Amino acid sequence: MIVRFALIGCTVLALLAAPAAAVAPSSGWSSRTSEGSVRVSADRNHITVCDLQDDGHTVEAEYATSMLGVYTVPDSNQHRFGCGTDRTFISRIDVFKMCVTRNGFRQCEDSVWIKRR
Image (cartoon, rainbow, N blue to C red):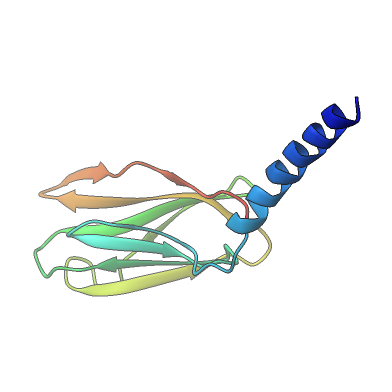
């Protein structure tokens, strides 16, 4: 009986220790393609979207917050190389995705859901 409790205790400790390793300091979350990138800060309050090519395509980031707001952040200078930023004041960013407009057609990457750390 004592062996069972010891085994269960070790299992519980192992499960509790695993998330602790994932809580290590982080630089945030990001998504990148050859055309652009999106980065969310570790505090989940700042988002930056960058157009990485001067190719006539527009790069934007869409994001949703913990207060159910949905927002769009364009890069700073439309279709040329550059970045744009935005921030939240009360809520935190929960999900984001990068979208590229090519020849009038908008295509978005898969959404990146932020896991709490």
